Amino acid sequence: MWKRDEAVKPANQPSPAAPVATTAPASATAALQPDTRRIERDLVNIGKSVVIKGELSGSEDLTIEGHVEGKIELKDNVLTIGPNGRIKAQVFAKAVIVLGEVHGNIAASEKVDIRDGGSVDGDVVSPKVAIAEGAHFRGSVDMQKKPGQPGQAQPVKTEPSKSAVASPPVAAQAAQPAAH
Amino acid sequence: MAFSDLFSRLRKADADSDTGAAAAPVSPTKALARFTVGLAGRVAPVLLDLGPVIGGNVSFFGERLGCKILVEDLAKDIDRHVAERRAAELPRFLETRIARETDSVDGILCWDLFDFLDKASAAALARHLVRVLKPNGLLLAFFNTYEPKAGEPQPPALYTKYVVVDSGHLQHRTYAASRGRQKPFQNRDIQKMFEPLRITDQFLLKSHMREVLFRKPSAADTSAAPAS
Image (tube, each protein chain N blue to C red):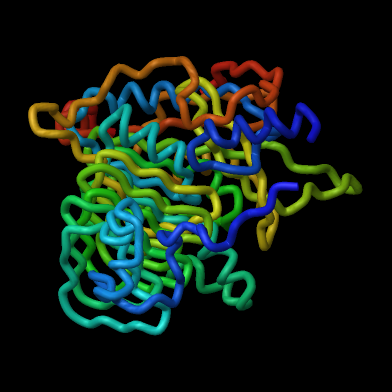
């Protein structure tokens, strides 16, 4: 029977309580394979017990499980607010995934994804926004158009949208104009 | 795993973010299409949605119509007031609930929220919505027209999430409410409540739901109207 070799467990699995670290210690890094090193460089965690007040910026993907107050700027990278993450900040990133709590406005150049259990109180500006059913959201959503595209409406099509759940039964009830 | 389970999981994945509602019925709607057409000609219209946040609806109105969407789930406020036995304070609360400037919103989706409000609360909210709606702005609301007769069982206390499938169909997903629908509004009460908005379309569905589309008259409309 196949048995997983614990010794080759991927090193890039984020540990929720991992300390803030942008670079691994030299001795540990030397022992890792080149691919693993690369992955570890690209993933940074802010652990549950960490509290940051001020401005947080960088050029790596970041997962926050702790508390951050102030401003977060990861313009070319993905920011993930983990289930334990509590953010009270203005957020600027390429993409933002919310599983925890955010109080503040979010601006993303690609996508904002508020997952089941995630909570956002603030305004969201992004060309693509996904909000799961179990998510909490209060604020506004502005799916700004890219430069060159006017904020003009697209023609309204009658076929089902992608987001619609496919094939539920259509209730057999026709609409009739009511007498005024 | 049964095939039905497998397909329902696949549908869930396709739905991008909405979950757990594959079996909810889809019903036709006439007024939504008129509402979307009315908004489609505007540049970056501001849309106020008084229902719970639904990812599919945000995508529909945001991506297809280029709307800026404001989500204000008033059902939660009703529930909170009822649970805290402060329902009598709802009219005062609703009068100022939505912090928007006068004439700042292009479209308002009330769905069937008014069915869950008593007359005083409904009137207070309607006044507030009329104020924030821009001239020529549109307001869509659904009203239940059926009242159970004496001795008939009361329907369960359920809100409905209206998920836009397309501009002609809505999926109805129910969830628990703290109190049931209140006494249905008569047509004249609806007209009076939303004055000076004008009803541009209304449709009575076989489900006893009246879909009403209102438009706020512009200054030109008002000046052109004959003095009464």
